[in-house]
Length: 436
Image (cartoon, rainbow, N blue to C red; front, side, top):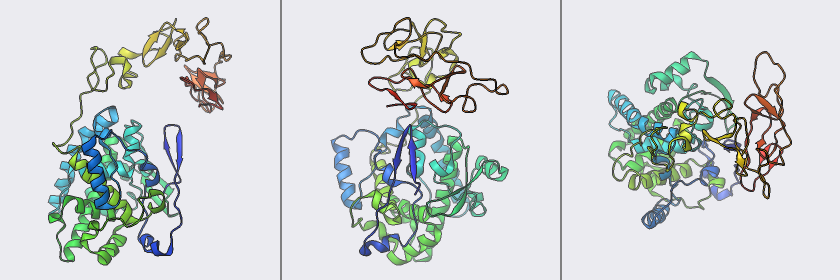
């Protein structure tokens, strides 16, 4: 379990309470890669009465509540749209591999989606990451390099190239104190292929083991298939076999007998498999009830329409940030301030500034005077010459805006360590370089 999980500027510390003697056997088998204690706090989407009833039903069935990820399938944001567009291709690729290797099992898009999300992809989608993604932190592919010999034939060419190139390999320590080799710098699509390849390998081995014990995984319910694939994926193949031998193939039909407490039981392979299975069944009966969700079109940044269905048009949509139609800087907005690619006059308390800087939100009871918030006493200075490098961590202890270094202690230019200057909003104030 990772010590911390970052989401935006917040840090959530994940802990594991000690176990009683009667619960000791729960931790005989493996550890989970992800911080479930944190994940459980991030249900996506609002539940109607039918979904609330379904949630209660599944909680009773599995002994753990399903996590609702409906909101991640709306296509709101570039990452979600690329995720939805890639899923069918990834599923076809993985099913082709399973068929070529002679396995009777296959995978559904919903399986791959839930495994990706619950292994850390949640943070990829909610943070709108599309490239530069760290596999250890966000994709659950901690040992992809260590197990490359077994995984190679399951992985997409784009992922194999990263492994074999060596430049993207990172060595780190997992929650068990073991040194592992993972990948970093992946695109969202590469991350999805990598996660799906490891999942398919785990499911294939589980299928073979279950077949050797007199059962057939491909004829079992989809939820049971995911349960065992998840056990093997998270706990490891050796541990998965021990659990299978000890409890039998129908182990998923036994509800979790203890409290639904992710902080306490996050290292239990059974607990983690059950809440993922519960979440998978919820997704099958809601998000995937009428087929696979489709990605909306990309936002057109100049047609005056909300193309992607997020209630934001053109430059008001963050997806248009950086587009030529929504470029706002000192050259295009010399007499005003910029926000979300739009140039404002810079004379009001909520859009205050000049010279194409980010519009400031003046503190309570302040007005914008001469296009400046009275509390802003930092005029900024260019950073010292540093080999042609612009404003950054190497030459600015405050924050940077348009290659100018600011102190980073004012509400309209808040930040530190040479990071981007942010404008604090509403009742927030800049405290030690953070808007609070």
